[in-house]
Length: 208
Image 1 (cartoon, rainbow, N blue to C red):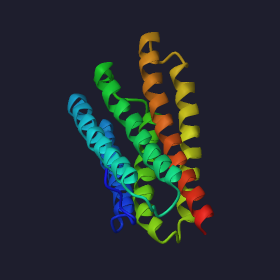
Image 2 (cartoon, rainbow, N blue to C red):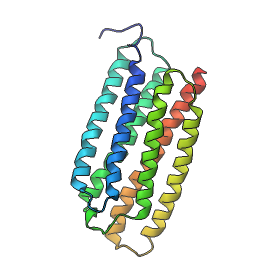
Image 3 (cartoon, rainbow, N blue to C red):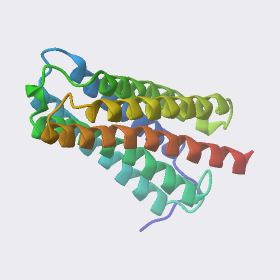
Image 4 (tube, rainbow, N blue to C red):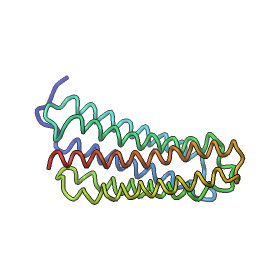
């Protein structure tokens, strides 16, 4: 393998931005679950497609990392940031897949709190995508991780209220089990967004 002494101009930053842009697309697809005539199979299929595209970005990032001798910041942090961005997509894909595979389209509607969690993911994806290009300068990033932390707290509250609703007797036991697994993936995606933000904060602190 041929090593470069310097990384391709902005190659790492471009890949981080591409991964974050895919998260925006994925969250947008999940938002369709709020539509009264949502096509759950189409949502699941498109989430799988965007997850595969995200995997390719991660693989390209690792190939670039392995062939570059001098990196813009710690190799471990580059790997961690790429991995955490990928984790978010994995959890979002699971949401799209499970709602279809569990036949949740048979419900009149998904619980309101699930839609609130999806809205949090949309906003988290947006602010993450906005922040990634600023990594190259390491400037004006603190508002980003503060906002993601706030959104994660909002997701925690919606998740708790969702659990209260699921165990209120409104749904039969099997439906509760299905909905809770989807809810767990939604919360995990929100947590993963916070892990991305924490990684960015670590990078900025080290390099400031």
